[in-house]
Length: 305
Length: 305
Image (tube, rainbow over all chains, first blue to last red):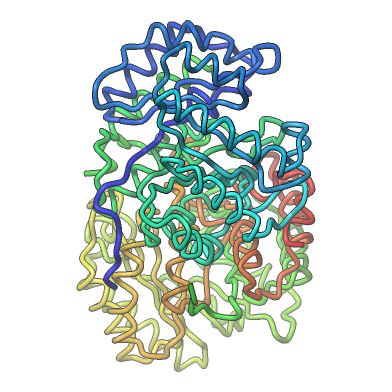
């Protein structure tokens, strides 16, 4: 077969936000800073540092300001934050964050449960937020949550997803992200959806935020690569996802994703050996085994040789 | 995208052989029989009942004769055994087994460690064995182990794999199976290898025996489906694989595979709800959590609705 695959794939590391946001154990700011430094040494070039949310609702993100004030924002690394409303954006501006992401759910039920807004209301607010962020000189990625299915509603209409993306394109979002929030995407659906999306977004960068809830995460990556996607959100160790589902895995694991990419000859700029070492170190800190798989192989340090 | 996918996919269930062969806890023959009955009620139409091996080496398979004498060999269900030598085949003949599989490793190191034979010697013996099995009226599937990589040697030459398959085709094996014994296959490799294999085997049925050791199992399934593969070995709960690798997963899980297939609209004849129930029941018997993922979702019983 001759596959048309991107030569280089960029990893957007979300362990510090999606990965740990629901973990009960609060990670110290120092430990977060140390993790950021290690991820950069691994070769990761995009890191989601925090969200700006109500610390009473998400205690793990309470130190966002302190974290942003302390991390060494090295050249060549993109540091991003998730913003979810005007107050949230104000805090990001205050922290001089240069890249933000914001998301609207394509599922009416999830939108109401997650943000107490209809999809239309949430989209209107997101448009205002994105405009404000761009006026503040930020790069913005605009995303659709539950783009491939919803745990509450089941199927999600592609037309609704595309309509939201269209709104984001009208206000010139710098990047579009589709999130499989409930981990319900399948590779056929990825292959059916992305060409339609491309018609709307043209050459605008596209990222996929995939979960491995049902074991299909890397199958979706494989199909997305063939559809030209070269930017994936991943989480160290496969942390993240719903903590209320026993045994269910979270985001696709950075190390498993990189392993597969390297095995297929794609470049990521990431040192897999050191990444696995970093993941194991973070496991020790968290006191539990992560869902990633390549970390658990004997001699995994030579997996990509 | 318009994908060319098989409408119906056949599952070859290996939990009773590959799945439990290395489990320390010995499953009673009664429990195995009950499991076979449940798998049939789930809609599984191919079951690998046992291997015929030295019971001192694999105690879990010591009751093979008793099992074959007791199971109700229903019409429409294929009951298969793994045979590994002349004595093994004699036992299968004695048990009136009508479908057997036998494998040769494509890796010299693995072949010597696993069977104390070179690849060439093992292939010669397999050819004799297959001829004998066919003379005895059996259907035979002939397989290549480590077809996509070897934990000892790393890469495995496609030419060597194809040469083995060519030998099997010369003696009219009824089915060809490629086994990713070390769980090292990646989807690009599947896509690169299968068209070359098809040139040799034509319309001969092809099965893939995939492991999920590195999380890439279902990505490989997705690529294989596009290459026309409609027959997969899977193991209930994802049991199997190397028991000496902590946390490492085994065979691709039957329930996760079926979940993905159903989500993409492919038929399997399997009732996923009852399959998950069966897997959870077997987990209770084994006293531990299995690696499969869809079993652990709340409301997983409605996953495929």
